Image 1 (cartoon, rainbow, N blue to C red):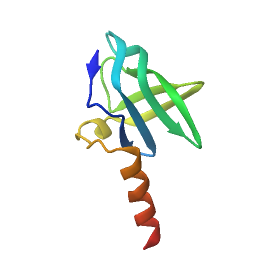
Image 2 (image 1 turned 90 degrees about the vertical axis):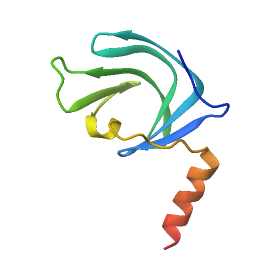
Image 3 (image 1 turned 180 degrees about the horizontal axis):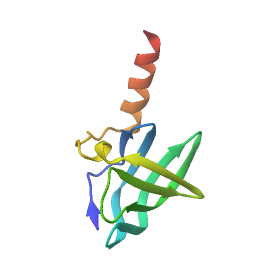
Image 4 (image 1 turned 45 degrees about the vertical axis):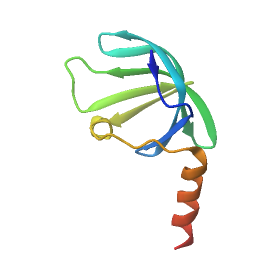
Length: 101
């Protein structure tokens, strides 16, 4: 169990916007986290529940995200940097400000 701040958190990872609830639950296994609750991924225009995170054993440079019927490979370097949490409102504002330029 991981408990975050008292508000949802939005983080941009590569091409995906990821939303974390205040409370995140999951089952840790060798090479994976399964039964995830509290994490969603915006894919195309849909918010899908992140079901599982896997890595290859022995580890390489990829992390695999499973959400719905979608399996995506993400470069491990996306997770080596700590990303700041922002509220949805702040994230929407940043996107709007970038598109104005």
